[in-house]
Image 1 (cartoon, rainbow, N blue to C red):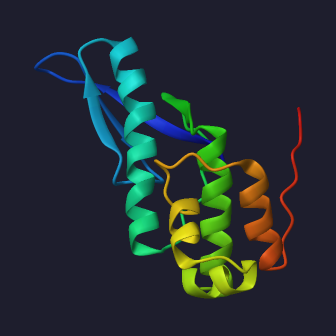
Image 2 (cartoon, rainbow, N blue to C red; image 1 turned 135 degrees about the vertical axis):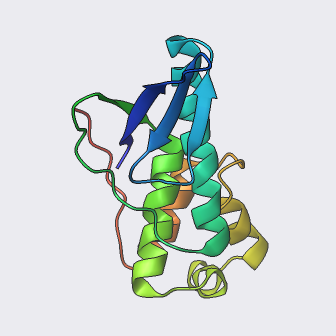
Amino acid sequence: MSKYPAHFEPDPAGGYVVTFRDIPEAITQGETLEEAREAAADALLTAMDFYFEDQRPVPAPSQAQDGEELVELPLSAVAKVALLNELCKQRVRPTDLAHAMGVQKQEVTRILDLAHVTKIDTIGRALKAIGKELELVVH
């Protein structure tokens, strides 16, 4: 769930427009292909905020099609997205998670904030509180 296919379309006015099939909220552009790639990574991460704000699951990435490039989410965001998706799947509210973890709701609010740095152990504790386990795998 960390690499999303992006389409880089040359813009007749110059530069490139970048869109994501799986995350339609992520749209950006860049004057050069390199700028467009950097902007795509930022747009993808920024678009995740919409899912967190609405407390709705983030779609899994589909397979890249011809002409698409994969854009990767930071691992810290991937862990938080996994937590959000599990909360949505189980219909667990942030208040319920706070209770299950034995913490104040404000701590869960920070855990679910992509802009807030959260220790991976804390995300692991949150997942454990709802019956899941966070596992780190190196490929």
